[in-house]
Structures are given as structure tokens and as C-alpha cells.
Length: 543
Ligand code: GLC
Figure (cartoon, rainbow, N blue to C red):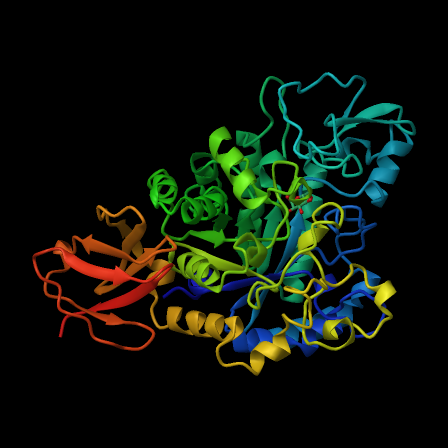
């Protein structure tokens, strides 16, 4: 097995240092805090941590507005603290990927300050300027709740600058080789420090061309290919993971011929998991899996249920979007842009059975799964906070002051803790769940451990079965001579399914959590009953 393909077997864990543990009582999480809590992540059994932006930033987009790419935000500590964290993570066999925001900087970045200062400043051409705001008219506005145009007038430069996100995030100009070289230097800086790769933010928007949507352009792929070539030559085995919130057929080119990204998030499958469980019907999910093109052998999908952004509904039909809003965000306060700003547990009404079903589904699909911090204990959200902060509140470690997140006075915390009766930190916290053998946390730990007993989950192919009962989703995952059968009841009532397992005639299904032996597969349909939201993982054995 190529060690360079470690990401195929990995379970990822996404966290924001800011929200994890605060060691110096300033109300912000930091690297020393994170380092002190690595036990939790090691016990959970995850393999790779994805850290959201850790760089100096005015925090107008929670750090995705970067003011210096090669430093640590002072609230998080020093570069030495980062090094100590990385060493400790690596000692525990935890890999670490960081965030690479290529598309834009903060308007506070010295490059932009230089660029705006004079038309002949060498940095002027690092950004995208125009005398008018009518270029690239066909381009949609992404943050439609806050921005009305992708152009903003800069009174200092006396010109408009281009931005796909907030107006304080000017887009870099990737037609300028100096920008591409500089971004490679940034990558090199972090790779030389030892990071294992990058989650690359907002990939589709790097290059602009008149008369196009300015998304997924061939020139954008050229930029990526060049960065990948440089990365492979300098430090083979480091990961590039794409955030490209696009249809599967538009994401596929980001894998190239195995010469662009190693991984890309599968955005469209995410809302369809929520649709399928609400409709109690596998169809939306199977449709998108059918529409997902094959990817090169050296590549991998990243699958997730929730992350730090809204549950985006850009990739579903209008009818599906209306349904999702009415079922999952009846309170308009839960909506933002084209999506829903809620965490996993509240989305599923705190129903443990549904949380387990969805998490089992996540861990069974082709690709490597991503767990969003706090979802392993079923943390709640606070939809009354601004922007997407609803899902970014401090990690709930225990039932003490500030949930064990910080010793600062509660007013100083960068975001207030969730305190609702159901999801508040006295009720939902790591310590409590560590003392409870039947907790969600223990269940997750076990799920991850069982997943790791077979490489089919990360590497196997998938064959979807089509039982007449459409409330049941069933598929096999096969790698070489090993096959795992996954059966999931998407509904709230008991179900029975007749599976055509003809291709596995004579096999004995062995349930993977307890080792129970099920009846041998015969030529006739294989009949299985499942309780509400019930799930099975079977290893098929030929004894
Ligand atoms: C990505 C990030 C999001 C951020 C945006 C602009 O989509 O996930 O949080 O706001 O990029 O940087």
C-alpha cells in the first residue's frame, strides 16, 4: 500500500482552535489548549485533524479573512506553540492539515494595503480591479444575504475591486505569476513546518474571464495543477483537499488525471442524506450516488454531515430546497444565504437513533468521513448568534464554569456557550459522556473502531442494491476478496427488506459490532428485518 495514500483510510476531525480549549484565560481557544486535549481525539480514534484558519486576521469572516499567511494569530499562541502541538499530534499518529485560502485575502493584508495605495504599486496587479462595476455580469453573488455585488468601490484606489465573498475579502489575481509563486511559498512554509496537507478553500473561483460564470474555468485548473506539481516535487505524500461546492460532474475535473486534488468534498451528497431520512426514502441519495462519476484510483471523496458553514442547499432542486427549509429550518432565524445554520443533533431533533443512523451512513459511504467537532457528543447550536457562529460555539468539555473551555470570565468568551436545557453544557459534555458507557461519544468511538477493522470502507467499490422496500438503503462495499454489506432503515418504523444477494451466494453474513452469525445467503432473496432507523454492517464470510 502506498503510504502516500494514507488519506484513504483516514477519519478526519474538523476543529477551530478558537473554539476548542483556551489555556490562557483570554476567551479564545489556543494551541496549548488544543495540545492538552489531544487525548480526547486519540481516544475517539480519528486520524487527521483539519484546523480552520489559524492566521492573523481581523476575524470578519472567522479567520477566512487572512492578514498574514505565514504566522499564527496571537490569540492562538506562537509559532513555537504550533510546532509543539504538531509534534505532539504526530507523536500520537494524528496527522494535521491546515487551511489554504487561495482565492482572497483580508482587505487588511499588507498586499492589499499596498495595492490600493497607488496604480503603479507593484502589488496593484495582485488583485482584480476595474474602473466600472459592470464586468463579469454573469457571475452570481455567493453571500447573497450580505453582499449585493461582487464589485466594491475602493475610495483609496479610486477603482472597483473584485470579491466573490465578503466585500472585505478582495480576490487575488491568479493571472499574475507573482501571486502563484507567493502562494506556493506559503504552502512550502507550512509543509516545511511539517503539516500533512491543506484543505483548499473556495477553489472554483480563482480565475475570472469575461462572458463566463467565472467558476471552474480551465485556467483555475491550471493553477491547481501547477501547485500540485510543486507540492509533489517538494514533499510527496502531502494532501490537497478541495472545497468546491459544485455538482459532482463539475467537481470531477478537480481530481484531474490524479494530478490536481487528492481529495474533494462531496457536497451534493450531504443535503441528500438529510432529505432521504426526512422523506424516509433512499431515492434522493441513490440518485446522487448514481450521478457521481468515477474518480482516479489515487483520489478520494471527503464526506461530511456538518461543518462550520451553513448546511448548504445550493446543490438541490427548488422543490427539495423548500422541503428542506420547511422540515429543518421552520424558524427563519435558522436560515442563512442558501442554507441552514444548524448542527447535526438539533437538525435531527436530538433523536439518538437518527444521529446514529446518519453517522453510520456517513461512515459507510465511499470516501473518507469528516466529523465536525462537538458532533461526537451531540452538541447543539445557537441560531441567535450572527453569521454562521450558531455552529461555532465553544467545545463543551464538562459541566463546570465555561464548560471547561476557558477560565476567563464568561463575558470574555469569544462566543457564548450553548446553555439551553437540552443542549447546554451541563447536559451535553465530554466528561459526562466519558462516564457513561451508553453515551453517544462511546458509540462513535466504537463505530470508528469497527470501521477500521476493514479497509473496504475507505477503499472498496460500492454496489447499490434495490430492494422493493424503498425505505431501506442497502449496498455492498468490496475490496479484493473482502465484502461488507451495509443495510440501513431510513424510517421511524420497523421495516423488512428482501435483498438480492445473488452475487454473494453461499456467503455467511457476520454482524460487525457483535460478531453474530446470520443465516447463509441462498439463491432466494435474503430477508432482513430492521427496527426504526436500524442499521447493519455485515462482513460476508465464506467459511
Ligand atoms: C469557504 C469557507 C467559509 C468562508 C468562505 C470565504 O467557503 O468554508 O467559511 O466564509 O470560504 O472565505
